[in-house]
Length: 304
Image 1 (cartoon, rainbow, N blue to C red):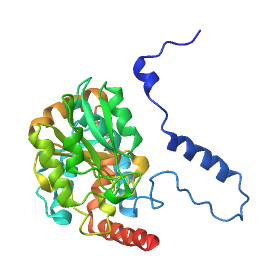
Image 2: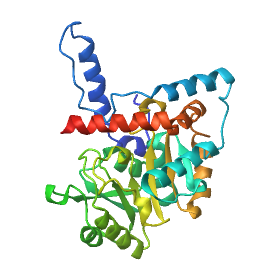
Image 3: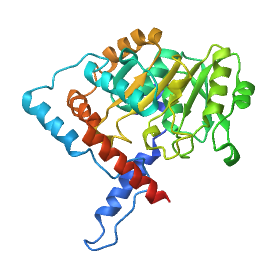
């Protein structure tokens, strides 16, 4: 007798990249010791791991017993360091109070969608885009409306396309810049026009910026938070900060949205990993930041 599944569970497709990654790891394990190195092109994961200071900070936290629950929004010193990073790296004033530490960017996306959208709402997204985003929307009963894009558009939507697709049930846009899987960024001027279009219709602009720290072009390496304090930004320690398995991210929201995000965090997962948060404090030490910039240059050289 089949076990009864919810309609929600039945309509969520697998995240195929994780299945491919699992099969790739299994294949790699069968290779002889002196075989050529296998290159993995299936998952967005830096081949660098956390720098020494970050690893040492995690060990220190465990040794000192700094492992208990934190506030649902995360350690205040970590939120403050992220705020300082926005100021020094992007020249943008993002108050620490608007930053929520999350269990990876995936949790940040879930929190944003739960706080902003209801069942039956429609959210505009580019096609192609990160597949999990539409499934997160589906899980809460909302619907992703995919906007076809072309190479000439950098596989990103523009303001006219957003305006044309906006309907009675549309409540916002969910973008990614730089994008997974295309790697392209939205031109800052176009992103400003998109945000203006969404704002004029009373919608929410949510931008996934988890790859922003790795941008190589100053023109595109700008945060959407510069557009105003009504932009919702998703970010992560996984990519630029090389902490994929630590499952730590953050969400920047308008002040009015923060109480809802805090309540949702409290109920869904209490708080992000305390050890990961303690370790992430060391990401912003001068030595660590210098190492991250060396690694960013290395990524750029590989792509040349």
